[in-house]
Image 1 (spheres, one colour):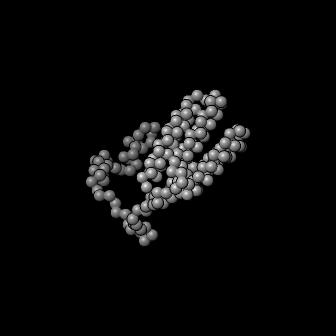
Image 2 (cartoon, helix red, strand yellow; image 1 turned 90 degrees about the horizontal axis):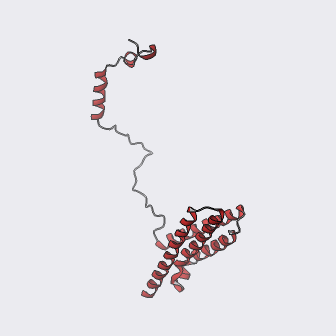
Image 3 (tube, helix red, strand yellow; image 1 turned 180 degrees about the vertical axis):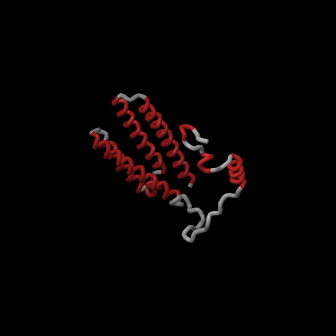
Length: 169
């Protein structure tokens, strides 16, 4: 008995009947999963702590420094692409990094300093929105305007919270 195009059917090739296939299938689904051997190089240790820095202030400082480096990279990218806004991005990156590095010292004298990060980011979002409007984009600049509004709101909120925390001490 041949299958389509004169080729032998699967039953002829493997000499397996339909009832044998059904029993193999049923037995496979009833079987327990295979045991995985323990190899000497595979160890099970407790999960590592996902937080690199347990101190909240260190985490904030590292995050702010990272954001400052990203702004500095954007300044270089603006310089390479010929946009004049690279100067503003460079100045913002220097201010951002300086405030991030000196944050604990500055925060003792100026509790509203946390809002500065959001103000800088809001100003840069407005600059990016302006550049997108200037190029002729329509939807993306509106997103950056919305982001800038949110960042200014967060600057106000963080500054107010920092002042309240400072006065409570």
